[in-house]
Length: 508
Image 1: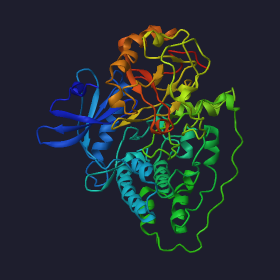
Image 2 (image 1 turned 90 degrees about the vertical axis):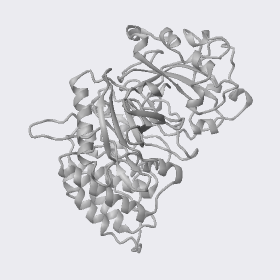
Image 3 (image 1 turned 120 degrees about the vertical axis):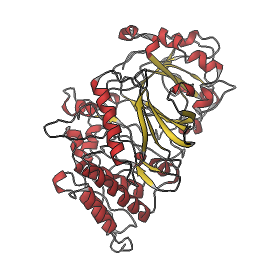
Image 4 (image 1 turned 30 degrees about the horizontal axis):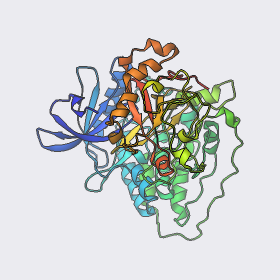
């Protein structure tokens, strides 16, 4: 990656902190004052009024609140000559609570409760200023250099105005923490933020979001049903805390705590020393599957810092949820994709895919997915063993943290940024799951190139010029790497856009 090409005057880029489907966050130095900051560069170009309005909404919402001690401060913002917007934010070297949850497990109840009080106070200030956050979750609560927590990422923030409808069909949500009314495409309200913060506190104490299994996958239809289940008590924790969270997460917004301020005060009043009569509400029986397994996307591992910790939270657009709820085909169009719990036998053959290209195959155990050489330009790069997946592979937003990638498999029928155009074994002299190291390898550069991408396009994708694509490398996740999978993927996204359908391989 060419960090110096960000082009933001007055800032010197140091390293990449994280990368998603539509933005990259850099650690940078503000030259005028010698301060380290987080520089968020959007990969999209503000080409439409809607793009500009979204960016201005984020900047305005975050800027209004950045004086609050528990809101991540915004220092600067602007738009480059090429139309790409940027924001300069307070650097939070402690990372997010989502990172901490996956690295070290659940937080002590008292600490999670105190965090909830602080973030609820920030949320109360936001609501008083007419701002809704709409994406509260552990990953959006950051820790600064002094150990203070702050609410970040107002990318979905809404500023309701009288007589103005809010867009609810195209915004991305995190289903594990979104309120149930979001799945009905209801207009956002402060009650939705109250629900999401309560779900976040529950996850911090329990180790995973409420109503979500430790392992396995959930279809959207089942997620909707699970929102109606009673909230189980937190084992070993005062039932008073669960009572507050249960009140804040009532399925009907009218039954919830009336405001973020009320949630703050209720949490502060909880006596965590009262653990008497703690019980655990039994979980209802699982909902029957709404579609046969063959109709669901393949489950693939998702990266986490701790190799065996299971992660079920993904981002999905509400438009995809609407497709499931109102579609006529009866098929779940999106599935949560936590790590697979199945393990194939580890053999020398399975860990060493052929590098000769070979004949077309319906499946190749060494790659972990069915692959083929038929109509596959990747095979023409000599000596690399490049192949193509038999059917299209699509991915959601990619997050890169110090070279370690986290990404979720997406259904190609719903909007997604990334799609696989080549797959190959890791180079013998570059066996790593670190993206930073892998993308600089000369063999990887040959395979994951704009030339191979251009030759791999099919159908309507031929109308999209090669220079409109962003190319990247997807190494094996930490879980895959620990399980012995030594395979990388070349992926591409139309710069600044989400796509629907398949561009490089036939869709299943």
